[in-house]
Length: 512
Image 1 (cartoon, rainbow, N blue to C red):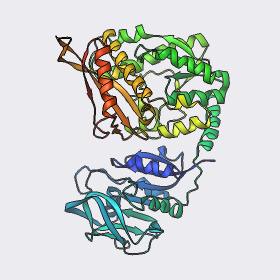
Image 2: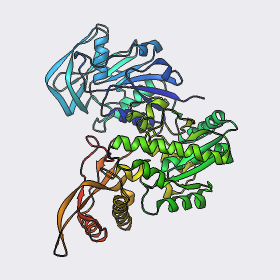
Image 3: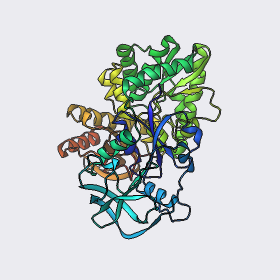
Image 4: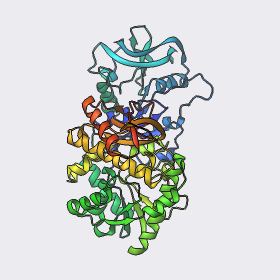
């Protein structure tokens, strides 16, 4: 049985992923697709309704994203949010114009007419606004259902055609009754069944794996992270010994990581992991390379080439299983798990054009916290599930500039000190991701009455739910001081420690 699905059409809003999350939190499946999607990408789902996201554009601007008319072929409920609402207004011959000053941040709205969308919502409530345009004229058969305190239209609807629109953002926590409004849309208007759960996901995924793979062998690419661990466990449950677990040490791992990870897998999960040391091959290909995208491409292609060599030891292997997540697809501009969309933003850095494997990506529609929940239900030990994310390209994207054995050793030592301090101070589990970055600069210092000219280490700590957005973690100053002192004193070649206090957006979690 297919899950009921709400399709979210993305127009570039910083809040789009929040819409997906709010719906999934209600146990209803949701997907995010770009506004120029093709019909075949969504026909595989049991669609119950559409939500059009906000975005930075204005509908009257040249080359602004348009309303995909395919939506109307389904005759299903539609909810437009902010820019999505304005697109609907324009499409049905209403008018949109610039406000002048705009409405940004917290605002008050007052309901004008009864609406299913506002069932259970107070007559006056607070919402979150973020728009510079307003509705000047509604389509003739639409009604205004609420106004802001500035007497600007904040919601409209055509209940006959089940088309609704809000100028504010119900997906943002600052909207007082935002969750209730989303509930009303997905349940009262779209009549969705809340059957999206980890138990159902596991059951359906195991069946899908068996159907896709059959009696063939599958190589499971392990990294030691949560995603690949969950994927390998699912594969093992579905096809048993036909799941061949492989861990490649590319020479870009953290201190003693290869041995620790393989020991954990074999002792705790009985996955029988095959370890291959390919550090010489990877580092050889990366010699002299400093461009970040080129690093990713080289690492991604080298992974595949090494996997192709390894398969010869196990007979014919047609499939490669990996832990691609939904944020990987969203952030690379992809949708629906289409392979082409993850080549340049891949968890191991990019796939070659002549890929000889068929990819199996069982968790490609999950966010990180959803993967962890699946892991819990699969009885994967918490020490696996609580590990901080670690990128496929490893330390290669945490070393700015060229990668050398000397620079790798500096970063490994600094990162090991940093992470161990966080664990000793009981801060590790409070942080989504923490790591050190080796910067491409040297600075003057004084150590032991001598002038030095050495490297700079940057500490990066963030909190996040799914990696789509993040905020820097405010580590207590005494712990920061301890980190700085120990790194400078214990790591040869480092004389300065700084801290990254940038959120995502505008920055990214990783540096490259």
